[in-house]
Length: 449
Image (cartoon, rainbow, N blue to C red; front, side, top):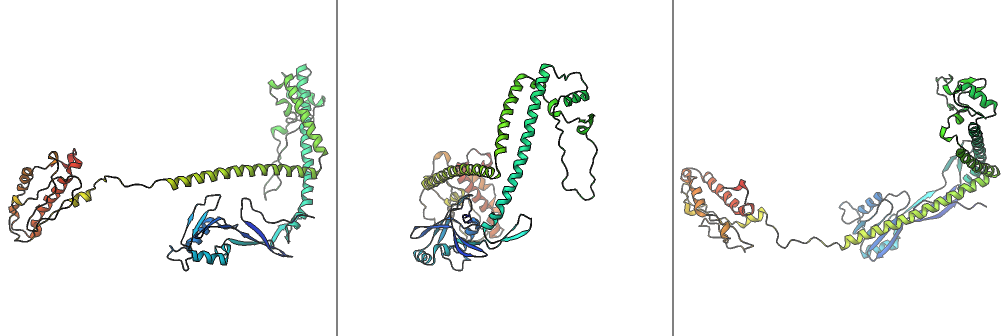
């Protein structure tokens, strides 16, 4: 009795269970793998057949609390560590939802099951007609006799090819021995005469096989003109009949080559004898044994690759977990924004717009030193901007700054509006800010005032 056949998928680590059986076919439930890590975490390591990783990721997003479009969020978050060959989802949820999922069933709650059926199997039968099969066993029952029939045809074709190759080896050995002994002269002879001699000496002709057109194209004509290989050189002899002899290299016409051909001949004789004794059934079993060996080697290779992949993945995960976080620098560099904020400027808006600005009211700006604490702003009645004194080497000379201010001739602005009269002050403040940043940009000609 034939062993029942069930669905199987290479590399699938889930489960396949037969859930229903009818005359017209059976139904199978395919389940993925999910396990409980702790009270608030689940781990999915396999998806049902025909369920893609990206599709399942979108499903988890749709039930996550972080998704604003989720109608009934069930999980807090999830983490994905899948690759091109494995599935790895870690799902985090609350204790209450974990209990609810267990009561409903983890496979059902997280959509890790699917079904397939054998009730709709249609194939071509041995006569080339579409036929519906109810069980896989019915397919095999019709396939076995057909397969054995083709093994018989295969045996005949292989045997014809081996016998032809064996006959060619025998003729090559005779030809080389004839040339070496001087019985057959090849040099300075007409090709037609040499072919007739080989024919008379009993050498088997092997004309080149021409490819025949199996399916004729509508309206196409078959060219039947003779090619150079099919030209008749002598009576009953074509140009390609003895190419397998005359195309041999001159260096191969030696006794050493004869010994090599004799060894090949003995080996080929053994193959012909084994094939003649073989039956279609024994040939099929031999192929199945070879297939099983290859599958075992492939499984072993896959196991080694899987082990190496897991070790590499574990190593990467450990390195990520133990990698220290980035620490802030002990002495952070001051940027332009902080430098600008360090300059405290107060301006008196009161008074008439026509009042002249005196050089004594010029703000005094000095280089800040270190991280000095902020000081109380001076009175609004004073126009001053002060910072802690820095090193003498980087101090700005006051007389030079006052001389530059006097060059603006501020008295000429006395008849302008308050906004217009503030332009020199804005420019002055810009120079003040740049002067404050000057120590950090020393050596640049662009800031040489």
